[in-house]
Structure formats: C-alpha cells, structure tokens
Length: 172
Image (cartoon, rainbow, N blue to C red):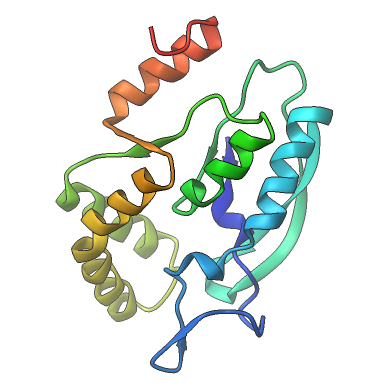
C-alpha cells in the first residue's frame, strides 16, 4: 500500500496555500500531485520506486525509502488527496479502481484523533481543533472526491471490490 500522504510539500515550500496566515494542510495544493502520479506510473511500469517519507511533526520529507510491487497484480495508493489524481491515473491507464471510504463521521473523528495523539503529530489542542473542523467538512470532502471520479463505498464493499480486481473480476 502506497501512502500518498507522504507526498505533502515541505512546510517551507512557497507554493503552499495559506489561510489566515497559516499553511492550509487540508487544501489539495499542499500536496505534490505531480510527483505522486509519476511515482505511481514508475511503480506500475517498473515495479519499484523510491518514495518519500514525510514527518508530519516536522512538516517535511525526511527521507526516501524503496517501495516494490514487482510481481503484484495491483497495488493500492491511499490518502486524503488520492481522488485528486484519479483522472490523470485513468488517462495513463494506471487505474483499476478509485474509492472514497464512507464511514460514520464520528468514527472517523475518533480514529483520526487517536492516531494523531498517539503519533504526537501536533499539540493536542491543535489536533482537537483540526479534528472538529475535519468532522464538519467531511460531507463536502466526500462530495469532492466523488466529483473527481472516486466511488464512495463502505470499507467492506471496497475490500470485496479489491479482491475481485485481484481475482480478475472487476465489479462482479
């Protein structure tokens, strides 16, 4: 599984979007879509690529690591901005399926907060404020993702569809 969140731009990148003087990390422009697509293309065609390792607390890429999919019938690229590259991946013939996870908003809030607190991504007050804002924005985010070509589905349905793709039976 390729984590597309590792393709965020560095915190000092002058192209980062800002809101109220602060970097807007929830805006798609805070993410390097071009490099993500090129990496997916390289993985699909060559079976390996060096991918970034992003440290959220440091607001930057801190390393790269080798990622291999050689011999796999498909691989999954996941992340909040994945839908942003659906059209380009489809155009390049790289896309087997595109899904946006639909789950109860409260569950998403609790999972995100627990993860972010345990990983000490930011100060707890910041994480709670951001989590509440994302909770409120979630319906709009899902609408945007489906508008960009991802299909909204529950986790169980996505797992079934991925299993069908691996078996060679897309969307049975």
